[in-house]
Structure formats: C-alpha cells, structure tokens
Amino acid sequence: MQVTIVGLPGSGKTTVFNALTGGHAETGSFSGGRAAPNIGVVKVPDERLDRLSELFRPKKTTPADVTYVDVAIPAGAAREGTIQPDVLAQIRNADALLHVIAGFPEAARDPWQDLDELELEFTVADLDVVDKRLEKLRTSGRHGSPAEREQNALEEELLARVQPHLGGGAPLRAFPLDDDEERRLRGFRFLTQKPVLVILNIGEEDLPQAAAMEAEGKSRISQPRSDMAVMAAQIEAEMAQLSAEDAAPFMEDLGIAEASRGRIIRLTYALLGLFSFFTAGEDECRAWTLLTGDTAVDAAGAIHSDLARGFIRAEVVTYEDLMSAGSMAEARKRGVLRSEGKMYAVKDGDVIQVLFNVAR
Image (cartoon, rainbow, N blue to C red; front, side, top):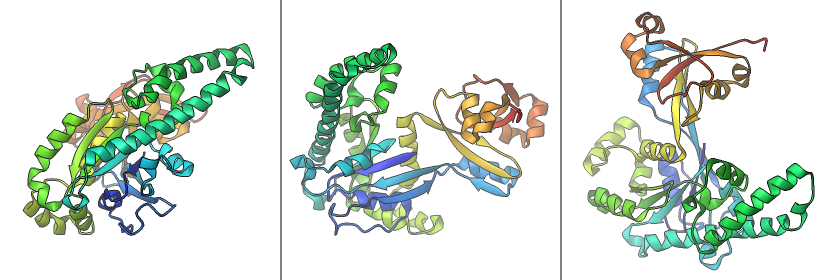
C-alpha cells in the first residue's frame, strides 16, 4: 500500500512524514523546491502478529508494510494552478492521500482554506484529464471492433456525466458510482477519487484541546471515503527517534495515549477497506493485506500465485480461537479449525493455511 503525503508548503507535511516513518528528511528549507519525493517504508504494528510469534516462535516474523511518499508541491503552485505534471503523476500513484493542513499558531493561516485550495487544484487536474479523454473518444473512439466501440461508448457516457461534477469544483469521491463505473475510472488514477485522510497538524500547546479540535474537524469532512485526525507532528517526529520505552514517559506527560503511526495506519486501512489475515508456523509468522470481501483464493494469491492456481481448500481459524487453543492441533481437536473453499470471505484476523496442488 502506498500513501502519499500532500499539503501546501509550510503545512508540516515532511514533519508528518518523519513522525510516521522515523525518518530524518529535511524540513522547512526547501519549501517545495526539491524534485525527488521522500520515501519511507513502515512496518504495520499489530499486537496479534506479536502474540502469534510468541506462540509459534518462528524463524522469521514479517509484518505488513505501508510505503509513505512525501511529495513536494512548490510554493504558490496550487493557488496559481501551476503544479507540474510530473508532481501530479507522483501523486496519482498513491492508493490513498494524507492531506496535511497547518493548525499550529506559527502558520498564521486558515488550514481549511488551504485544504480547499489544494483540493480545487486536484479537481482541475482531473477535469483536464476528462476533457482530453472525451475529445479523443469523440473522434477516434468511433473506430475499432464492435466490442471496442461499445466499451468506448460506455466510457464516453460515464465521463460526460463526471465532467460537470468536476467542473463545479466537486471531487470524484463525492460522485455516486456503481462497482463497474468505479472499475472503469480506476485506470485514470484520478486524484480526487482517492480516499483522503486530512491531518490537522497542531502545536504541542494545543494537545489538551486535540480531541475537541478533531471532533470539530470531522464535522467539516462530509465527503465519502474521507476522514480526519489531529496530530502534533513536531513532537511526534522527535519521539519517533526514541525507543518505545524512552518515549513512554514523554507521551504520558503530554497526554498522548498512542503514537500516531499506528492510528494513522488504522484510519487509512479503514478508508481503503483493507484488513489483515495471518499465516503462522515454525518457519514464519506473517501478516497479509486484503480488501474487504476478498475470498480464500484471493488470500492464496496474495501469498503466492501458485497457491491460487492450485487451490484445493483453506484451513481457517480465527486469531482468538487459535490463541485460546494454544496450538493448531488443539484448535483442530476443538473443532474451531475449519476447511473452507475458494469463495469463503476472509475475515480480519483469520489465520489461514492454504492446501494446494502443485501439479495444476
């Protein structure tokens, strides 16, 4: 999963990047002037995987991971409509966006106005893509095989409905789409179709009001597949350089119940409709990521394509039942280890062993 961090210069988005990744990316001085993004990979914290490793004592434990990409947007570019195509292309690669807005006193500006400014620029960029594609479909789209012309006609009809919505300044995530239409648009990698988590970056002095600020902020975020969270990025970036044990007393003094890294990942998973299942054994305990509604054969394919091709069945036990039983053998004896077919809808926390035929 790739999550791209965006925001106007001075919002503290690179500080958020450092807080989430434990990185040391330069902040402040470039003000959007660099070309290359900052990239960091974060292991997804999951106490269930830790406990499975304690139970099985494997040679290797592998968490799921999230890649964070901090993209530089030059000062004034959003207001002037001059964000370069290569910068927009970097953002289009994201599965979800973290949109950082400045809520600390030194910023001395309206964070919600900043949010609207950059969102409008993304809407204009998406509209430009729609306009150019419609122009092409209305000329060359009339050619090709009957099947190709049929698909072009469906695409043209959908984009013609989307065009005035974007033209009115509204994002695509607020446009009603059925599953087929969603898939049809997916290849365009529209910026405003992506789920977005708005991060209100506050100062340390505002931490006592963080819960109230977050509640107020959530009331402003009414679009589908959107959410918001409050984060004191500077202090969290500093604590990210400490061990969990060393950071704990500082967090207690500041009233921070949980480091934002785990919470931001959970919120992003929820926006994307993602969840984790596990494989567990003496060789490895590992967390894997699936979409809500994915099946046992999808889980097999996530592990390895050969398992999906030769799928026979999946042996499934819930994390809770396995921990209660204490072993796979005891789980089988208790009858909580089940055999499931290809179309079984995998659940969050399922522990799965795939049986497959290598000859298929």
